[in-house]
Length: 216
Image (tube, rainbow, N blue to C red; front, side):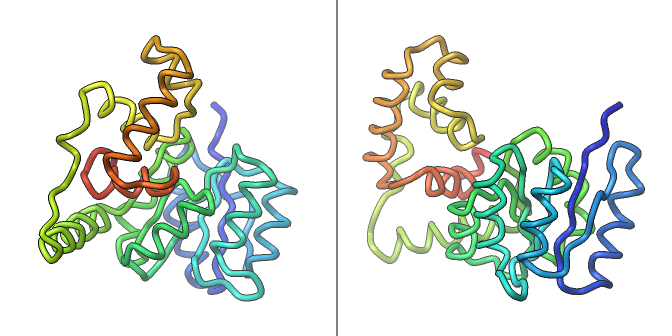
């Protein structure tokens, strides 16, 4: 059985030790390297070619978000999970924009880390359940304050299908193959979805889907 190769990046040795302990109890996982700063994480990711990088968001020399962006740019097949103490939307959006596949709160890492690595290794997104709940609460409050309505119900059934697949990280081409549509038709659906929901890029599509509980 091919094991999931994992690189740990955190500037605290005790945190890395705890993460390693959690992951190496799983027979299908192996930690292939550890980095204590962002630059080292980028170098080791290129050298060791892990399937998953578990990266602290606040790293010396190069912060976790910038390091994640460089790692994904070097090798789009690497799936980065950000570890963070921040549950607010701005951090999550920055992490997604950098190409991160998952976002875990440090205080729930013990319960969620193994599942997050399993899911991310398949190229699918994973977020701490607390994140989804908080994003939805913040979003509902935002709509109420501005007297706005959520536009999700304006989407057609097909658009809802396309939204979920895009949020799961699939390309237009992959969505087209799954739904038996042309890539042009998928691009048209994508444009309509973004117009109706006032979204501007893929990171915002993922964020919206997490907020709505469409992906977990």
